[in-house]
Each structure stands twice: as structure tokens, then as C-alpha cells.
Length: 314
Image (cartoon, rainbow, N blue to C red):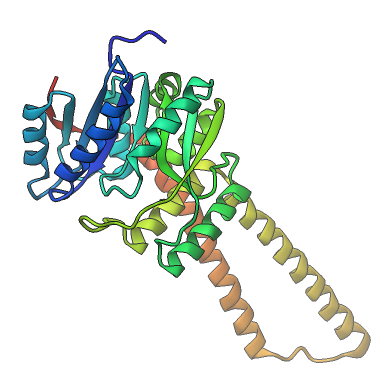
């Protein structure tokens, strides 16, 4: 596809990563230069509300090399919003989202590019193993991928993150989507197109600290499920119908037993247990419903996904 921009855009969301910027640029520049693509490349940092010297480091990098650009968001909007900003402003024929912590090796971009030239519009990186993660994270990640793909219509590849190569046509489709609640891996899967996988070994993080704790990962998991499926709502409908059917059977049993044998209906304690159990189910189902209602509220307000405070570079 003809383009006036570079061939490759690497988009990098960052927050408080002042120690990682120079290391990232040094390694990625060397890898991209070694590809010897005549149309060139660019690195686009998206500063997602950093409070340290991250933005200053990006500005210095841009002065040293105009191929390094940046966007500074007005506050912390979250990684999904920062990725959206990167996709909106990347100029390359292919776009590669990448984390700044160097856990996703930039050397994989070459094999991804080769797959793209074979005709694949999406080439996603798949971790060969998760040995660099602690055991609880490995187990929960495995359970989540399986649950998501069982519930959602948008099947995401197991053990694949945001690290992937996207053809310009895929990027344009994602940019045209109107929703404010964004789970990018789900949107990538929804867009379709021909996809291929490239396996890689994910290194341990050596610079900085992760910004994702278990609570943020839980919220991201909920976003992924509620943005890609209405199955949780259907599950509670089915469960409610099943419980109502059991209650009808039990009520029929009590009526028949009382008529035939005159047996008193005892069991105040069991009645309280049943009430508490059903009350808990109702509150849980209201919580699921509330997740979807909250998403509707965010959508109808139609606020922008992000706000740019400053552009660094052309």
C-alpha cells in the first residue's frame, strides 16, 4: 500500500518510565535500522500522565532524532486510551504496539514484518511460556483466556498481549470504532483479517516497575468480558430460571406432603438460609447488570477517549 509516511510505526504507551526511555530507544533504533527498510520507521511515545521526567526524556530524544515523536496526554487515561491515541496518530503502513520495559523483544519485529509481506494483516506475538511471571499470575492468566474465549464472540489468542503488527487497514478499522470503553485485544480480534502468530520468549523486566497491580488486572479482565459479550447477563437469566424451577418443585413437594400426610412444615433456619442465598444471588446479578449499565452511561456521555496536551515532533 502506498503511503507518504514511514513503513513501521512503533507505538509505546508510557507512564513514569524515565529510566526506561533511553534504553528502549537505543535498542529499538538499532533493531529497526538493521531492517534497512527504505521507507524508514518512527517511534511514537504516548505519555499517559507521567509525573516524573518521562516527558522531558521524550522531548530530548526527539531533538536528537526526529523519527522519535511523542504525545503527552492531559492526565492518566489508562493504557487502552493511550494505545488508542497511538493508533490515531501513527503514520506507518504497519503499526506495532510495544511496552517500554523491553519484555517484548524488538527483534521479533523482523519476523512479524516477514509474515506481513506474506499477506497477513495481523501478526501477533505469542509467549512461548510464562515462566517470567509468578505462579498466581500464570494460573489466573490461563483461566482468564479460557473463560473469555468461552464467553465472548471475539476470540483472543491465548498468551498474546498487545505486542503485534497491524496493517494500516486494520488500524483504520480500529480508529473508526466509536466506543469509549476499550479493550484493545478484543477490538483487534473483532476486526478480523488474516492473522498469524510469531512465538517469542518474554524476558523479565529489568527497568522500572509494572503499573498493573492485581486490582487493575481484574478491572481489565472485567472490561474484556463485558465489552465482548452479553453472556454474563444471559447466565443470570438462566440461573434465575433454574432456581425458580427448583423452588416450584420444592413448593409442590411441600404442598403434596402436607395434604397427604398432614406433616408440619418445619425449618425456620433453612428458610433463613434460602433467603440469604437468594438475596446474595440477587445482589450479585445486580452487580453484573450494573457493569453493563455503567458502560452505557460512559458511552452516552460521548466524551473523548483521551485528551492531548502536547505534541512532540511533527
